[in-house]
Length: 193
Image (tube, rainbow, N blue to C red; front, side):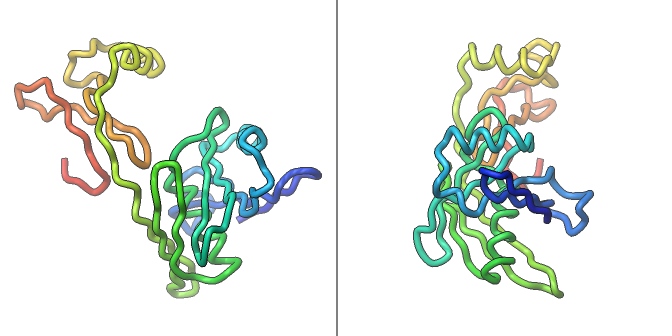
């Protein structure tokens, strides 16, 4: 963990999530443990200045081990970020000790358990439930253009999402090979393909 404080800005903690090695794990999420005085515009500005994929901002303590948390990429607020949640839980455990936490996110409640094992803190979270939705043709065209997929949407190996999963993130899975179907399936973390 490293720490940064701007002259007029909040204290920002930087963590490596999912690894004990600072060079490993997910990209370094930033954590602001006291964002109660920051409005949305200021949180977005801090996230943009940091340039990390997501930054987490604790905006309110709502009870024992319970917090409201918001996540910002450099461009917009996002509903949930797993690695920033883990980093925030570890930052709180370093400050307050391990235990049970619950974060109120825009995507729903996220319980996290932090324990000390062999001198190291470890966090385990239960992610928000994914939801499945259809993709509008205009959104599909925009996504394919942004991805520069270069393949026709009907190709089995194309980027075409039929039903993306929205949960911790959004991702799409193509139909199984040889299924003869044009339907699309979603994949949840830990599921077998």
